[in-house]
Amino acid sequence: MHLKTLSESLIARFAEIVGETNALTRAEDQGAYLHEWRDRYTGSTPVVLRPGSTDEVSRILTLAHAEDIAVVPQGGNTGLVGGQIPSRDGSEIVLSLERLKAVRNVDAIGGTMIVEAGVTLTEAQNAAKNAGRLFPLSLASEGSAQIGGVLATNAGGTAVLAYGNARSLALGLEAVLADGRIWHGLRRLKKDNTGYDLRDLLIGSEGTLGIITAASLKLFPMPAERETAIVAFDTPDAAMKLFRRAESEAGSSLTAFELWAHRAQEFALKYMPNVRDPFTDDYPWYALIELSHGGKGTRIANTIEPLLTSAHGQGFIRDATIARSLRQAEDFWRLREAFSEAQKGAGGSIKHDISVPIARIPEFLQRAAKVVDGVCPGARPVPFGHFGDGNLHYNVTQPEHMEKAQYLALWDAMSDAIFELVTELGGSISAEHGIGQMKRDVLKRYKSEVELDMMRAIKKALDPKGILNPGKLL
Ligand code: FAD
Image 1 (cartoon, rainbow, N blue to C red):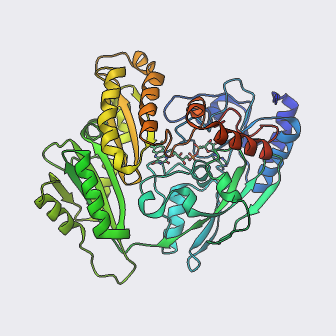
Image 2: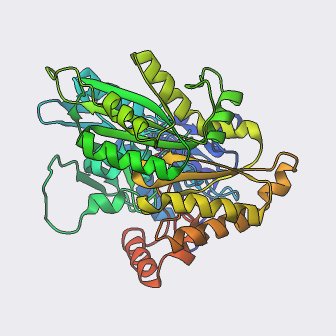
Image 3: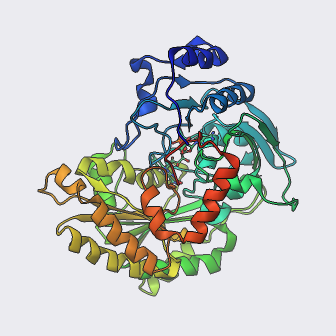
């Protein structure tokens, strides 16, 4: 399908829908929508539209569909695979959902809330908290990432172990289809076997099948108490042993198990403000463990200390520090959340968001280090991630005395080699960040023809003109 470029008169018709102040055409107003966090993707657009209601989104899509104009939905612009950035040729409209800000309903008794797409993750968490409930999804980008974006990417984060990813937290959606029709699917049911699951089809579709305008989300009881610790290990095998031990002793109270290599911590301490070293000595590997306990009235829990004492006695953990206050627990999390950004300080970084079956993480880490060395001797792996979900951010920082551009030119060679290993181990080339434009061509190599055909058929059925986020995912 050949999509058109926008004439001045057509831009004016789009602007009329949202009002002039919400149709940004000047370069100085558009900057924040055209560059992404990692400076890897930059686009161009004749206009950024900021609709203020689902009806306005619908009118924009009706016009775009009639005129064959491509539309790129954008939430908080924190996506890491370039899915929210328009092409460079200036032919695509950016549709920002940031003004869809209403928390339409919080039902503490029913355990659900309905929020619009532009509500940030932090705002959604706070809306739940104000009603005495927990919305557990949590990412380092939660201050900016928006509900529409987290559902469109099926985001994961640090609470997946206990509560699941964005998909598991959504009960229903409201979305605008490519032709402008509104799908009113804000159900609040746990059980609803009435045919194809359209909600799950849109979740994780990265803006290519429809534009999410609101969602009904699951809420949970607020934990009465949390126990948080950082543990030091010699090897990932030892971390695996503790993970299984924690799982069997703490059961569903185990809500986080995040692993990182010493280098991740070293970079965070060197390049990020307000982070503290939890230990006086250095160790090769660390994990942040969190247990969350019961509702109100539960007796003060004390599971983590005996767990770590016995693990230490048996010699498979080197050291451990338990948070003695909320502030200390926050310090631990601040350290964990600093790892992505800290790598910027150490030069170029080639990033992989991969998953493998959890039992194979130690093998992956051992073999991946050799793979990296084969592609670029001296490159420095900085693995960290959601160990309990089998998901690692296997990022690799440039060798100390190498030109950044020369190093980044090795991106494809490095990724291909890592993805080969991931595939051999039965893993995924994108655990939680999605495909976007970054992995679109790579996807073709790792999905079967049958899977790709099914995906193309769905895209064609829901967006026959291909106006929704073209060039992304497929
Ligand atoms: P955007 O970046 O604006 O968009 C992402 C994609 O969704 C694009 O394809 C866009 O077209 C589409 N989209 C956006 N809004 C809509 C909508 N309303 N309807 C349809 N399509 C839409 N991700 C994780 O999963 N786990 C992590 O732990 C994690 N940590 C991160 C830490 C940092 C520091 C950063 C910068 C990012 C991290 N991310 C993580 C990635 C990112 O935050 C998530 O992908 C997030 O879900 C994106 O939300 P957003 O609102 O910023 O979406």
